[in-house]
Length: 365
Image (tube, rainbow, N blue to C red):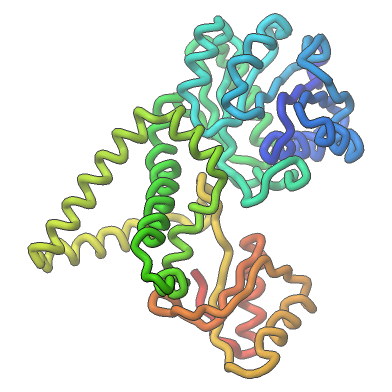
């Protein structure tokens, strides 16, 4: 068996990023891939990320040390059954889905548990597809591994070592625990954000004043509502029992908050905001989680012609790239007139020091 041969089923944003990371750190490994989109395969070959573009799941996958299943979850069952006859005993089969119970059940039903270790890189982007994949996308991000009960310990250790060598942070969890955790810290917030946006839409004034004034804090806490509807529909369907139970608990928490408001209970209301503030402030800023972190600063500027251009020039001349920039019109929950978003923490920190050097008043998020 060629132990340095790795196969990919699907080369979208995550699959492409993992493949690029492997190519970066293991330039001599042989990488093959199948994707329904032929243009994606052609681009991957052109970029020298993969060696072989497969038109189907065929004998090319027989000698793979690892096979990454990175296709949409709706295709997983069909692909698993096709791969079953192609894997040798030493092969490690994994996936990158954000819900693990369903694929673990499918793997068990097909008798593939000795080869399977579920995977979930907790990283992402607002953009999709191989063209937007990056080798560094999974760097410093938690990468959850969910081995089956029948997979050899040596396989789990080998896979954990591979993920760590790609500069991600591997964490081994039971797949049921994984789905409960992500259901609470990732799936629930997406549902809350989407329902909150729709609530504002449905109750807006005729001249859409809510929409016009919903800047700053509102846009930040509902940012994730801009995610892919198809992806989140599938996640809710695959993790529905956990999400339903978690939603029930959250609805109870909302009912308790409503009761505190209705009763004018000063101590309970204060406790609500104090405990949430303290717990949130205790979360490490460097923690990589399922909801993509934003790197933004707020800056006070004088309302004069060229004010924004001056800041942009200062940052550009010091090789700091700006992801987004704009005036904050509703500053009820924000500090600063100008919001500047960056691609990474290093750029954000560098911008703070640079702007302070030029005597701007800067507020970090």
